[in-house]
Amino acid sequence: MVTTAQTGAIQVADGVFAFIQEGGATNGGFIVGDEGVVVIEGFMTKAVAQKMLGEIKRVTSKPIRFLVYTHFHGDHTFAGGNFLPAVVIGHKECREELLEKWAPWVERFSTNRPDDAAEFRALKPIPPEIIFNEKLTIHLGNKRVELLYFGRAHTRGDIFIHIARDRVVFAGDAVVNGRVPAFMDGYPSSWINVLEQLQALDFTTLVPGHGLLGSKQTAADLQGFIAELRRQTRQAHDAGRSEAEALSAVRLPLYASWPGMQNLAVPVQRMYMEWRGQL
Picture 1: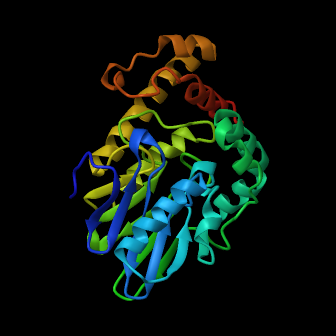
Picture 2 (picture 1 turned 180 degrees about the vertical axis):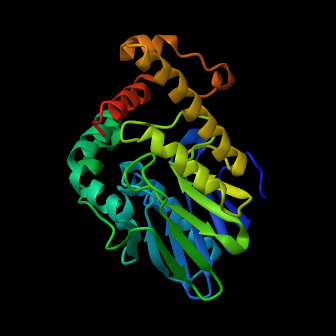
């Protein structure tokens, strides 16, 4: 297992590289096999995509054959066009969400990042052209790369990239390290179950969607956070309290140091929506 606070391109196994950004920005990576390269995540801006391409060229001259999206969010897909003509792969729900929600996500990112707004608004969606339901395997000669879907989590279409021989998992935003994940498209109850299934895989190194490199414990920590937040929120819901009252009653001292703890309104809202049958 690789444990490091390093950022940039980090070799986590033979031919397997994590790409860890500073400040909790979007992570990804790439896998080099005998027959080419698989890139994980399309990233948000051309500048980041070009940085990733530079890291790949530093390691290998082999062609990029596949680009894999872990889910549809713009910070993982907006700059996907920079990796073409690679074949783009994702879950079927990833493709559907990307196309359904493209315009509002462009506006969301353009508002939040005005310096990049012109770039975002000029983009056209690059959806997955190969999609799957539960499992898809990519063979790159000596590298076998499994794409796995365990259900709804951070979005409807989150997948995990498992390189079993090297005991590495790329988790996308279904696992973030030491921080509160974004819940605006999330399914909290199912997410807990997805993280349980993830931990049943054989791996020692986990590349999270945001934050530093982690391990199986990173997934367990996030599962514990969501489960405890759900438990407290359900208790308030069953007592007839409003979402605002449930939020004010939440106490999570074990996670007090996590960035984003001030933004629990959305996960509480999503939990109430689940229990009202709206998700």
